[in-house]
Image 1 (cartoon, rainbow, N blue to C red):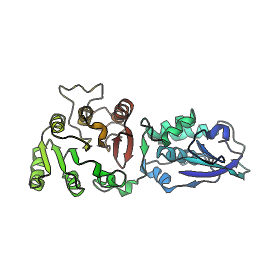
Image 2 (cartoon, rainbow, N blue to C red):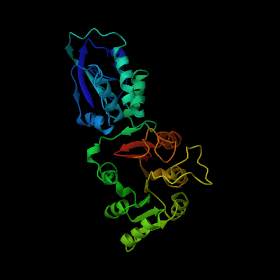
Image 3 (tube, helix red, strand yellow):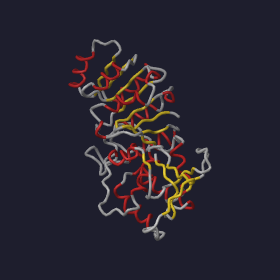
Image 4 (cartoon, rainbow, N blue to C red):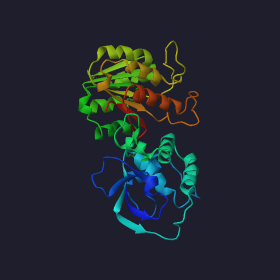
Length: 334
């Protein structure tokens, strides 16, 4: 993600920045928490992270804040930050920094960052060895794929899946929330053998039947997803791609949510999927658009707690790996 020569002097000295790992084969190359701002080579995917996360930098950001932020974005995307000790750049002028300057900048930046980047900052200023986990697909660490918000059109998160995942591994497609039928249409065009779609609205369901009813691969179901999904799971077997819509239909009734915050059907859907006999072979895509809300939206008082619950449950408890793609949160067994 970022390559830089050694800079002398800098606040990010080797004692503060270097990270031990077996990922690099050259003794002169070191993973670092951040390289210092004097001279950087930065991949465009890292720069795109600013717009992806809607980060508006404070107008009074000190000169030594951008490299620290870009380093955090690089690790969040699973891209290493490398210092090359075979080249040293001498520096004068602003070299005499007090020990707290970069830490103060991180404090200033944190209100502008989402929870993921705040976690990276905490690791950078604490046990920086933990940054290696971002590079090794550790299932406990969310990894962000490089995308840009201005590329997102309609169901782009579905259309872009084929760039990162082998969809031929999943003969069955199951979605909750048919809406205008974009998911069903995409699944048909992508060659899935079996396409299931659940819709709670009679009007939307009728429109979908009129549009897709002649395709024997498509099985449309009317009803509440948390009640219909268990029936679908009895009919299918093997690998499947589940696309769960983060729609809101009020509080759960008569269902044990396993301690999860109430409000979104996808929590009940997630708990149902976890009982699927072949879940370890499946790809789970969750429409994440409304999971990032802070403050909470009109569906209830969940906000980012929903996303935290999903990550803790799928990754922490079941050992799945989490990936962000556009507005979606994706879970897959490593």
